[in-house]
Length: 415
Ligand code: ASP
Ligand code: MG
Image (cartoon, rainbow, N blue to C red; front, top):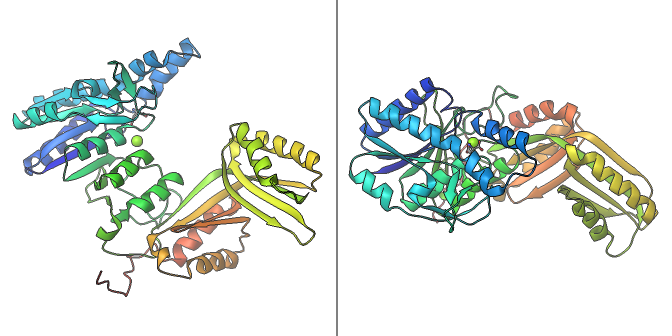
């Protein structure tokens, strides 16, 4: 029987009614002739509640005990789902990560999976049972419980699907799939039937939070297709898969954005070899992550150096740069703590020129100044004033016809 792995997130498991609904969905997959392995998250809000309990008790919980605590949410939901299934005459059994043999390294709170034993799962499936596994957790070589980092149940599901060589890994959540952009901002956003692993990684890293990034990396490594679907509505969702399996090749797949950005610019610093390293290392020594960087030498032989950081680190980064500017005898430090990043993502950019020009012209026509640009093979990002973000996303979304059916490229490939 073809095996599918289904993962249900916290909102899908949020109440007993919802758990009953999940049980019905699992049963219908089984009735369609599948062996089913289910990975569950903790009930909505539960992991946060457990973390608050620990923090209220001590600012320095033992990492071992912290993992014992925060892994319990999944144990509750797996048992409840199993009970619901058994009540509905669908034989099921639940297992913790340790019971299955999800072996991880010893890094508590962000452990990585080393190996997954399949014998328990296989034995249960052979008995005709539905297997339910706690997401987000494993066990280290010493037998201690570990957890995989926030959102880690996605990674559990993909790792289990890969270990079992499943047909598909289905991630059930509270949205219908992956959209061309955030439908809360742009109501014309369209559900993408398919997206490549690479594009999904760019979208995820840019803040489209449907899947944990690690799970997408893992799926791509093991060639395991992921389908993102809604627990609460019908529909085929979005298939995240390899580029060559994508039927409608589009130039651009989506627009991701993040609001919490800030830009800092040091200008007129006398040119010196190694100054870029000096600037960056001062900032990273303070544990501040830098995102975009631009640098250029002026005709006066001075250097302008501009970068972006997360907005919450803006004040700290600005202080460092102002001190440095004095030391270096630089001109001015300019900054804007209310900027946003807008990124266009698409594998089609590799083979189509003109994406950047359409994007920049569109923003220009909308009267939106671009403050910074970076590009990679399948992504173009710009920094704009946060006040212009919505207008910019809407204009670019329209310019690339993302609100319409996917355009197919005219070329046919023989390779
Ligand atoms: N319950 C965990 C969390 O809230 C893991 C997950 O839901 O994926 O982060
Ligand atoms: Mg999640």
